[in-house]
Amino acid sequence: MKVVLAFSGGLDTSVILKLIQEKLGAEVIAVTIDVGQGDDAIELEKKAKELGAMKFFCFDCKREFAARYISKNILANGLYEREYPLSTALARPLIAEKLVEIAKREGADAIAHGCTGKGNDQVRFDLAIEALSDLKIIAPVREWGLTRDWEMEYAKKNSIPVSKKIYSIDANMWGRSIEGGSLEDPSFEPPEDVFLWSKIENEKDKIIKLEFRNGLPVALNDESVELSTLIESLNKIAGSYGIGRIDHIEDRVVGIKSREVYECPAASVITKAHFALEKLTMTKWMLDSKALAEQKWGWLVFNGLWFEPLREALDEFMKKADEHVNGSISLRLGKKSFSLAGMSSDESLYHKEISTFEKSSFDQSIAKGFIDLFGLQSVMAEKRDV
Ligand code: ARG
Image (cartoon, rainbow, N blue to C red; front, top):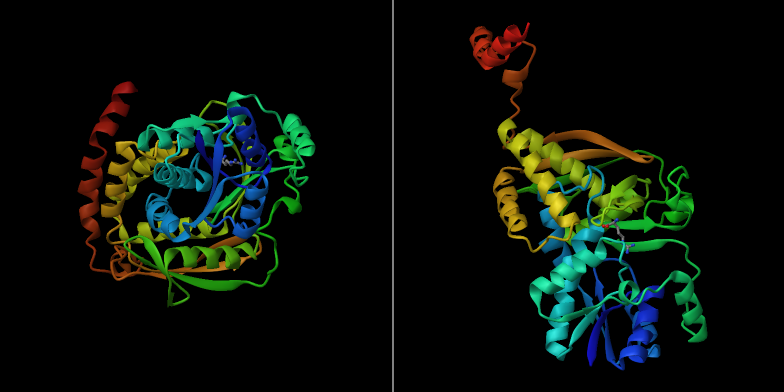
């Protein structure tokens, strides 16, 4: 039996790598997908091989992740429960897609992942793998009831190197999530040491400029750059101000509530800038309906339904809706916060000539009739009830 394992080098997947060989007598192909988590591929390869992996692959999918996944999130202003920019959720279907590709190429029988039976990632991996293949799925933590203590003990016995980390961390270029340990108590403020990408190094305000084409950022400070590069730069710039921290209670797919802490500097800045430009360039009807579609989109992506036709249909809508979202926007970065610092667009629907408090060509006298017709039924209904 040949198994492709999604390998991160952490405790779970290291233990699993060995256990699969031991319990199932299988050969393991360890695979790491680089979506900007910042791990060292050489170190990972060394670790995987030491644990007995027959082969190790690491694929750099950063550009693809930005182009095919994050871009859709940007157009959809993708947020779950109004706060979480869906970073982990977005990367899972891409990782699954690559695992399936490798499994087919290598003639593997199964794909293994280290997800627990309590989380969202098992749903995302399983549904994506099922949608794209008929491969068997092995989830040892869930199926064999592995606990952290048992894993630590097993690691010690098998001389598997483990770090003493207390948090469960997942990262990619769209954000870093930190769960577990002392954070499981929502009354406890996240200590500074949980943050890695948003350590405060700058306190002096700075203005940055983003340019958008068809709803997507294409230039940073007047320099045209590819999306993945722009995101990585922005993570560094905004992160150095402590921008992008999120701390909320989140509803998991399986119904459990969890306390989630994130740092998403680029995602926070881009999402806010993008929405601001949408409000400058979109009709009120479009904004209104798009908000409903966005909520649905975020719900689907969070819940692991990336391969659902509705998500694809909504993406077509977002693309069409954003075709006039062109322009540039400046943002003032300061300690732990940022604000808009001016925007402009050739396709703006804001016209000072009409909106001004000063004299303008807008004929105010037409408003009266409009108001009476606009509220006709509501006024009648209210009067009926009195
Ligand atoms: N709550 C987030 C989500 O479901 C983050 C999950 C992080 N995953 C992890 N294995 N630590 O998308």
